Image 1 (spheres, helix red, strand yellow):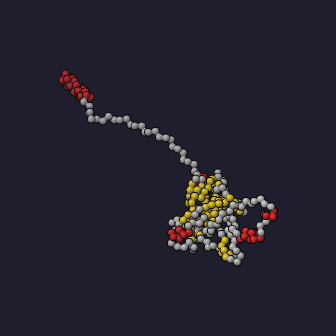
Image 2 (cartoon, rainbow, N blue to C red):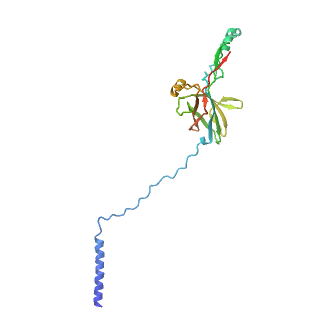
Image 3 (cartoon, rainbow, N blue to C red):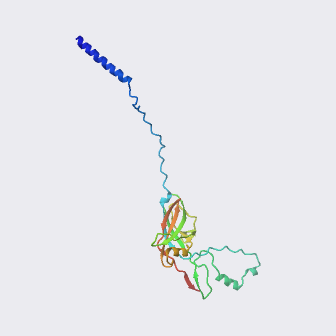
Length: 242
């Protein structure tokens, strides 16, 4: 029994020694675990922007006429105060007025002298169809008009627009380019000529005969999109005998 007690005491003493030795000789190369970093705080997600009203407005080219670029209206001449007899022009002056220039973007810009050939000036036009299902009015504008061959994709020239109008019951009236909520509009513009000489040089062919397409950049509620016209020819001038 005494021998067993002695052996037990030695085992216990050895175990304690090993424990103390381990505690006093830690590995200096051991890496101390670092605390996990907290994720950086992020701003709360922002709600998506409201959809543009442009998505509720459709625009298409209804028709194009490539004809002439007629002169604009001339300012009215001021009449001087004079006796009644002096206000009556002689017959020769009345004849000159009838045969002179007609003002405005009119179907016929001027008349020829009787018995001669002359051409009527028919204004080139661009007509648009605008359909809105928006619940508010939107602003509209034409940013650019380019002309190209119907069988090509290269722009051959640009065309200016002016005099926006809108169809109202029985006639076209001046338009402020505002599309009311839920409106259905037929809008029209006078369009200028491209540089036909440059068009022919770039295409390598005459501008009389080929079919053309107009690519029109329109802006609706600040959003620009491109629409294309049907195929159209350049119309020959209309000659008449007067």
